[in-house]
Image (tube, rainbow, N blue to C red; front, side, top):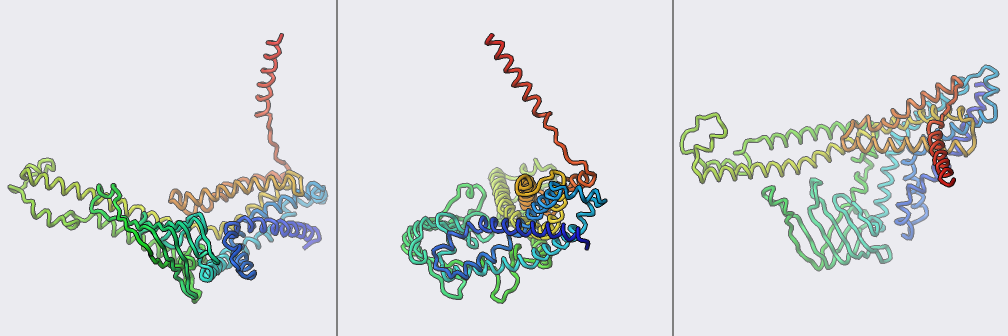
Length: 487
């Protein structure tokens, strides 16, 4: 490695380290802000809080690292151009590609490290993070429930208006929504004026004693029309004890086995899980299709009902509209009612299963997105470098002024497209791989364009006259009209 290559690499590494530390600290404060209210005032040991932050911090790397590479690239190469160091390099026959040679090798190495980090460190940190949350909840049960907002634990949503007591174990105005086992709708709703939390050591159960409240439960109807009325059963209680399973905060066994949560799995585990979920979804779709396609006499007691309806003569016609003519008036009414009930029950079954199958498909898409994100973070380092380095050479500005503006603007576009793509992919609007790579696909032409312009020493010129000149003409015309009116 020559002295010039060493100089460029050192300048870039110093800038990257400084920018990374600053941005990492900012993102940590922003990301952990939601947990500060639950950590403060709980008599937790300082080491527990530090460990909490350390385990939470790795998930910020996928956002901090690409932005740091982008900003460091713009600042470093912008500083070289501003101080005429690039001019000196070019006069010595050193092109931009040659100046970026060893930095490109380093960025490729950084991309591999980021993939390893996303595939191994982040899942384990997420695993330990949620495990630590469970341990905190066991010692401080009120930590599982934030005041004034709905908190989801497993299939239960809990909202508490106020918490009091030494550890926040005393609750006031408790509202609980307990979802059905298939995840569709609310099975039960509980409202109580007071509550008391307790949890035994080394237990996954959070005990909640509710006092002076009401219990509401949805009723299962036999047909679709009755279901539209949304019937329910109401009962009151003086005391009701509910045990909440906290394994959703640590969906794993205590032996450290891998968990069934997409953010806690590496690529091998994700591929295995996706295959299992896809196979299960295919089986369930086939079962639902077979159930809906089953003949009428095999469902809803249809066979017994048809035995009570017999044609007055043998039916030989193939015209469906003339089939009812072979039955008596009473049997026609009975057949129509049976058909209506059959259609209503089929519609209700399809409505219930549609959302359930969609949620299962959505879960598979989330696993695919997490799998692709491990590769996207590696590619994003390369992408941001080949956007930032040529852009810095073009704008010829270093420091913390204009480079920050360009870096933030590009990163906001990147992050917005990435968030939008993943959201649409989760809802099965586009393929999961396309949603994960959408931001990279959109910005890749920008990297090619900047690199081409910078290597050819063409620069980027933006002509604002097309927008400004019509506005100037408009104001000039208005000014002349006002002058003529005054005269």
